[in-house]
Length: 280
Ligand code: SAM
Image 1 (cartoon, helix red, strand yellow):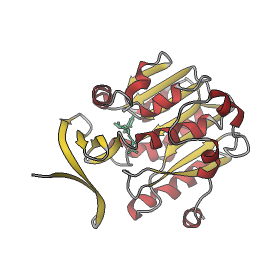
Image 2 (tube, helix red, strand yellow):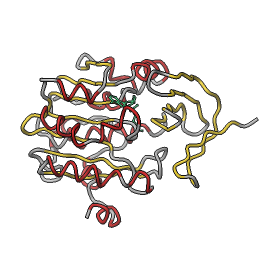
Image 3 (tube, helix red, strand yellow):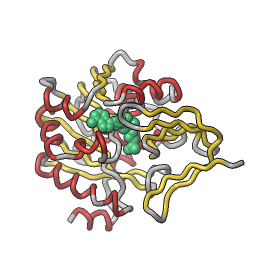
Image 4 (tube, protein in one colour):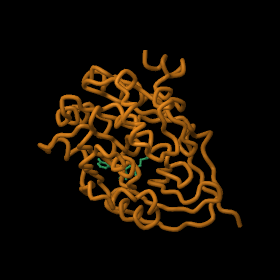
């Protein structure tokens, strides 16, 4: 008997992948957490039936959420990650020699535990002595903390359930409040292709524009995410990702990456016409 996993992106289309076996199944306090092993994409983590990551293409999302901001800020030392319990974004952040502290606030401790057990190559960042993990609500954390950060990366699920508030103007205002004077806030902002998702992207950009003088959208190709084309929104208090790109530091660090590089840093911010139109 063949076993197939399908994530419906609309009532009429989706992604279908042949499954070898289900490895883990749990109903946590916040969501259904499944781990499956697949023929073509390796192990995959699903939350409420939606793809969070696959072993095959996780590097694209995690590198592209982290490095464009880390190489736009002139000297990122303190980084906050909201969500991101699989540890992939944290792995990318702690690679940077300039980063001294990385704090990750994830609401669901079971996501962290499952990632450590089943995705050790993704969860690598948890082993770093620069990393601190807080199991709690990121919305509450940014509204209450007195700590400040050079960079905040929002690695969230879609805006439903506990992640709904991670797309709200209030949450963004609190992030802006705890950023340093040249701080940067970057969030995943869904796909521009599929109607139910693409309504979110212009709202995120509009909200960022009310707070940040430099707001930039960029794109990356992620095969297992809806439509395969994903967007990220960067709000910066001072530095521009193109004009202030820290190319010399990028060359000096010579991180071994699979997707991000200096040409791609610049190219990712060049938007197709239909996306530019969405932002008008
Ligand atoms: N790369 C993924 C994507 O775009 O599909 C995101 C993956 S990451 C595992 C998302 C994490 O955000 C989940 O583990 C979820 O538990 C966490 N999360 C959702 N709402 C949260 C909140 N309010 N505070 C902190 N973490 C939250």
